Length: 378
Image (cartoon, rainbow, N blue to C red):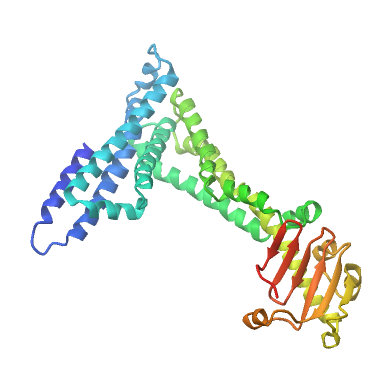
């Protein structure tokens, strides 16, 4: 009925575009809003909540469980039919609107769902399916269609908020990870290789990041199947109690991928900070006006630690390292194109065969597997 109402509304809007002085673009945008609100939102919520909600309200749910069909199969059929009905209704409404308004309707709709055709159709199927499943879950957890429909968006909002909270905690860990700094300094104080960084970034923030949506969705599926065969309790506390595990899993799935990224970031930050700190400490104890390129000044990490205050991070990384200080020099073109260079260059020969040279705000490291830091050097 709602889909039919949506189609009638779209056809009426299409007739208005032939009137003089009426903006076709504005009518198209109104049609997008009508289709999204009626078929994309209201119809999908009712499709997911009606069957279970009405059975729970009338008290026939317990009777249907006595039929010679397993409860699991009944649950699957109801959920599949609800998802298919919501998708079919939305697809029909979008098709009619496209026929009435043409390509501009798809272009405006694509602004929200993506202009790529494959992404567009994937979004048109995925978004209403998730919304329908959320309504079905609420109908299984609650009692009554209206109650389930009213509970859909607060429940989704709680899960989204939990996901955002997990991301926020992950960012805090990324920026201020004292515990991670301790572990990094103890077990892996230098940046990870590209062969390690690439798969970690791919699994966390790359093309595989959608995998982290699976655990909360899978938990919600298992919950809905279990709640399907149980009589719901009165009161919203019951729904909150069932929603809490899903929200916690969503928060963890948003937080946990940031832990390996935090290790990558903090490992790089340790070396970065140590190089800059060493370069600044050298400038305080060495008379740079007396430096000679032919006779570089040699220091050890222990010598520098005795002469200048260093952080625990720098003291640990400078163990078994040597420091070479030379006056500014090198390729004139490079020196001219880079501003704010210091009057001396500091090279730290770390104990793991990393050679890192600081030029002021820039530094370049030669490693056994390549380079790290600023891509060019004088």
